[in-house]
Image 1 (cartoon, helix red, strand yellow):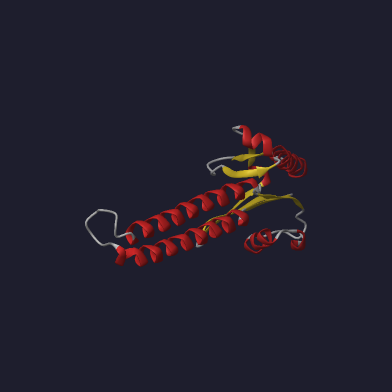
Image 2 (image 1 turned 135 degrees about the vertical axis):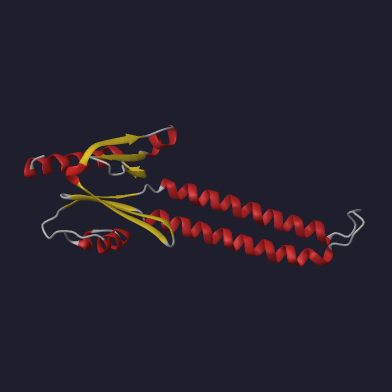
Length: 193
């Protein structure tokens, strides 16, 4: 299998997973870009709220004629610095979430399904499943947005006591399911039950 045909995050997964020389890459499943939109919108809203609260807090504490009976002008710089730090942290968290989202990948080959999930910066999960152990592939599309943008959740049910594989925001999930089922059927023809 040629790793040069893979995206950068899939090449990372390729280094973590053992592939046979004759194994053929069938598909690389990446998360749909619409999920990034949700991350960026959420980060922008939180950052905007923090900026508004910072400016409002600094304006209220800097105003000595509020009638509250106390002079809070000395804490206005503290509120501004604290608000700035929280705003920068919000932007950093949003960037990390976007990086983690883009780093998740599922590789479907002629012999196995490999899933690389980044759950946090220091927590990644690499799972491998023999293509022969696939029992069922289910697609879930709930709501109007997944139908409009053609993405969904791919659930791969496995034989035995293995945990089912679930991958969200799969673009063109019906094609992904068809690729997995096709690889499973070819594997059954080649190696039997």
